[in-house]
Structure formats: C-alpha cells, structure tokens
Image (cartoon, rainbow, N blue to C red; front, side, top):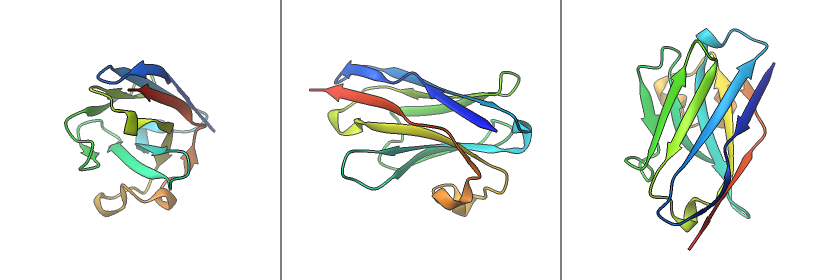
Length: 125
C-alpha cells in the first residue's frame, strides 16, 4: 500500500501549483481521498476531500474557491490544483485515502487508512 505525493515547490504569491497523489497496492476504487497540510509549528489541517466516484468534493471553508480537488480513477491519481497561493499556504501537503469516510468525518485524520509522505509547498511573498 503506497501513496506517493508530488508537485510541491517554491512559488510566488499569486501563483499556482498542482499536487498529485498516486496510489498503488490497494483497491483505490472504494476509497475517498483527502489532502491535509501542516505548516511549521502548527497542527495538521484538513484541506479537501473527494469521494470514491470523484463526483463529490469538500473543502475547508478557508480554502474554498482557490483549491480544487479531482481524481483520475483509471490512473489511480488524485490532484489538488492550488491557485492564487498565499504565503500562509506554505506547508507540507499530504494525501490520504480512506474506505470509511463519511461527510462528518472528511476532516478527521483518524478516518483515513493510508497516508503518503508530504510534499513541501513554499509560497514567497
């Protein structure tokens, strides 16, 4: 079971990045996927979630409108498009997958079964 996140990097404020998370080793079709982030010295924060069919999404209220989550089921890949980035978006972004995610638990770390390593996003002012 493996989740591999990529796409992080250094970007100026106002710019965009697209993160990718490729899953392997388990039946991804029955899993919802989420993105979380953790800034230095801060607690992990939920960012977004997409359901197993890719037709329902959820976002942290503070990020709605700037971030877009999507999934390519055939490619076992989940994306996080991040636009109009701000310095406060600087963090390590991690993807996670869970087979028992429900609406009330999308933002709860313990609801997710599998985690990938973080990819670092740095937004300069």
